Amino acid sequence: MRQGKGVLRSRLFLPWLALAAFCALWMWFVPTFEVVPFHLVWVGFALAYGFEAWDLLPTVLAAVGVSVITGAILVYRASTGHVAWAETTEILLMLMLAGLVVWHVQRREAALTMAGALADRAAQSSARRLRLARLTSHEMRTPLTIAQSYVEMTLDGQEHTDVRERLEVVHDELRRLARASDRLLRMIQLSDLLERMPVDVDALLRETAHRWASVADRHWMVDSDAGTVTLSAERIRGCLDTLIENAVRYTHKDDTVRLAASTNAGSLWLCVADAGRGFDAALAAAVNARQPHIAHLPPVAGDLDLSQTGLGIALVQEIVESRGGRVLVGRSHEGGALVLLILPMDTGTAGTVGGAPVTAELPGVVFDADKWATLSPDPMPAVRFSS
Image 1 (cartoon, helix red, strand yellow):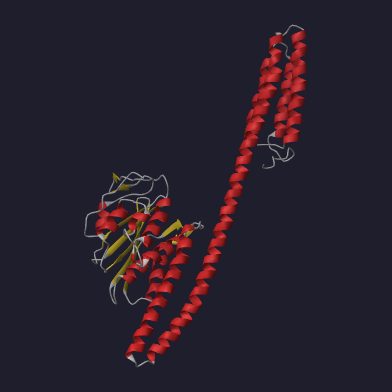
Image 2 (cartoon, one colour; image 1 turned 180 degrees about the horizontal axis):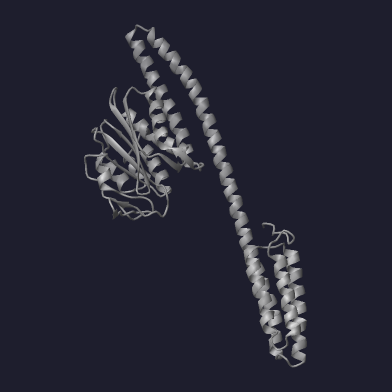
């Protein structure tokens, strides 16, 4: 149980004692009106203790002491005929009421203590998972990089066709393992609680495109005018990396991959579009209908590489929707896949588009068909408003 607040450090304990002393004097010097100050003492106790729990022992001693003093005055007034003897039953009743107040507040404090301990434990567990993921990913990535380098060096000097084919298979498998390591780290980063802070979204998208341009020979485009938004940079970077990885996988050299961001009536719109083969119709329907992530997988996965299913976008969708946002997918102007993340910037903000109110499923999440048209040649998907 959480320790109550010390009476010497309390802001309300001494004022309540002062109120009790004043009411006791009122009861003594103003006969026939004893019941009013008597009840004020215990009303003040219930209010003060409800706002600020005190240490149990001084609380009990003070309550009993005040009850004895005010009760003695009430009994004396009853003996002199100023009040009815029936009023003296209030002495025990008010003390019992004070005991119930103390009991309920102590239960609340115990529940808050348990909730705080569970939250601390969850935060510590999250930090341990993140450290373990980073360590594991690093320990996997380092030998994989070395192995890839040796295979590439061997390939460069290899003239035998059959040996080259075997080495290329090994090289491809090593690349798959490296991608799996990166995905593992991103999945844990995305699921952990991260600090929100003002982030220059435009700079973040430019940095992301520059980082991917060094490993993927694509035509990278950045179209962003979102400015500075309060969010978790690591989580947004992880979501973008997951979507860009899919875009790179399904495009070829010199194909376009476009990153876009803008604000719209209290929402942040983040978009990843490419010139690849686009989404499977069933996967697109599942994402836009907000179906559970398991619905994004094929009926029988078998030995299918999960990186080629909807598992990555399902993770992004789960993270975005858990924070009051939405994920929509469709066809981009480049002819490939379009993934749009709509994130609320200010919960409770009602927006307008062109002076007209917009319909939002959640506060701060707006769906603007005209803005969608700047991203896709197809109509905006039908938005499901139930959770």
